[in-house]
Length: 296
Image (cartoon, rainbow, N blue to C red; front, side, top):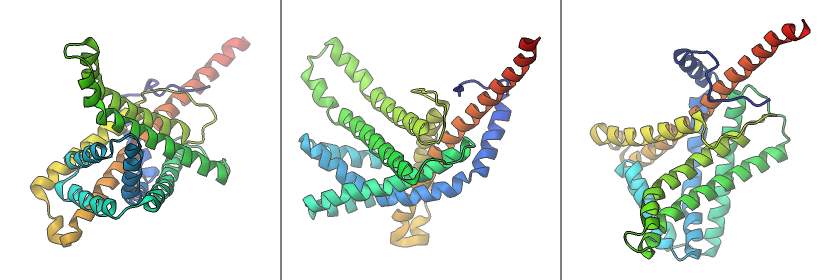
């Protein structure tokens, strides 16, 4: 029987927080986040190339590229976003169909390896063993990678064509007002959906219960926003990476951002695992208590 991750099952918030922290340490979330940072770093530029190649089919490559770089400029410290911008420009100027194809394959491989690390962490969080065959594991990892990447691209397309759609609607039109209000929440909803799909399919669970919004997905997105803007603010006032690493400082900052983002993603998974395990334990206890009364 599926359990509900939204209930605390009679356990206080303080106790839940202690269990989540203990589970984060036990599952080596910080070490696994370092794995994710490595794979994210490998997949970043190939992923950007594949996204721009996809948007070029719609005739919006330049607009999509500008929005992607603007996103990194807003979310990352200046040194890291400038590094991405410079590297991306160099690759685009010398790219061709073969490089685009290589970018898609390299991005898929790197991101799939990262998804495998996420699957291992979710199995540990849910206290289940991996019994799926190696072929099925790779199929699930690849499917999740493609599906989540597709959702991210769709959210980007919504933002890319948002102004175009808004301009096509007459000013004062109720549809224009609704679209202007719903555009960014819709993009955020797609990101939450990506988290929910990942947390639903990645662990090796026999019984699953689907929720579009889970406590873990909300925590994951919120933590990611906090670490992104928190790192940006910290480096703005206390940046010492350029002193210690010189020209490599931007690379270190980018890896640090990937590392903290990995912690956010995996911590959200642990939150879901702890809450669902609590709900499952409470359900078993209720069944044990109910059995003698039925026998009587």
